Image (cartoon, helix red, strand yellow):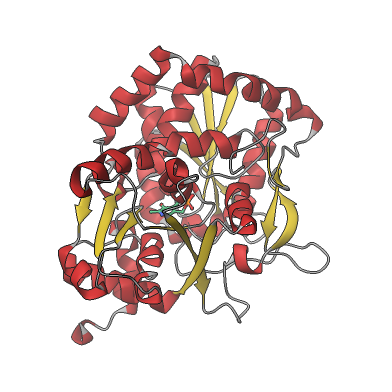
Length: 395
Ligand SMILES: *Cc1c(COP(=O)(O)O)cnc(C)c1O
């Protein structure tokens, strides 16, 4: 019920709305991805890289002081400890090993904050593949360190000057490149968005998060499921990976936190699940921030990883079905949650992950509740923002 059907839909969401020229290539991917992903040799290669290169399994860490504050048992799934600092590399490794199996020699990707671009450039360096990353010019300027990392890793970074010069425009440009070079090029999409089979493929590559979580909870708590499982949602990949093996586990409440930006009632927000309307963006039907006549409304969040105008069709459907509780955190709530984690547990979280942490004060727990928060990434990349927003004497 919650998984993709054979036509690529989750309820009324999803599908593969691609230009004619890409149809055959998306179809080729669709008919091959599951077979390749199930090959023992493929799984062995991916698993070995996840273990020895990424550093998996990522720990499930019991946050004692947070637990005490919120009156329950709080665990953090430490995706922040992965190589390159976030969950994104789980997906880039999977897709790039798959691209090699399909005989592709050139990799393209879009990136907003640069995290997916860095994860893609990293694996391309490892595998000796050509890599082109499309990035809005505004983001190129805002995220200079990640641009330098991608270049040092050998990728070509193409600044995109159309539209608002951010992630949506970079994605359009990557799709355009793919249309021109479909034979040798594989498009590595960074979240559970895009035409089918991308949302399902990305969710499967990220599902290692909940696979590990089950074994870790069983060992620590004597049961393999939590009462609450909380993740932030941009396009939805870290949430999809954290939720994947719990979709049918009705004892687990799934909680998604989207970026409210300056507030749900303002124009400056990125809360697509709560405020979006049905539409088609980047090849799939989902909930999208758009005007009455279908123009994309530029989303806003303090966190560059959450300001995408759409959301994965998986999450739109889970929300529509009532399986997913959706909360929002404003910039200020996320900053407060980042400070709290830093001061109480000695972990500086990514701004995106801080939105998930900001769910804690919004929920009411029972003393025996087990709560897992997917800590999707670390805060190194966000230090400029943290420094700009904190008054050091107030800390
Ligand atoms: C990119 C990113 C996100 C948002 O992307 P999803 O696909 O929704 O997971 C969240 N956290 C971190 C650390 C990121 O880099």
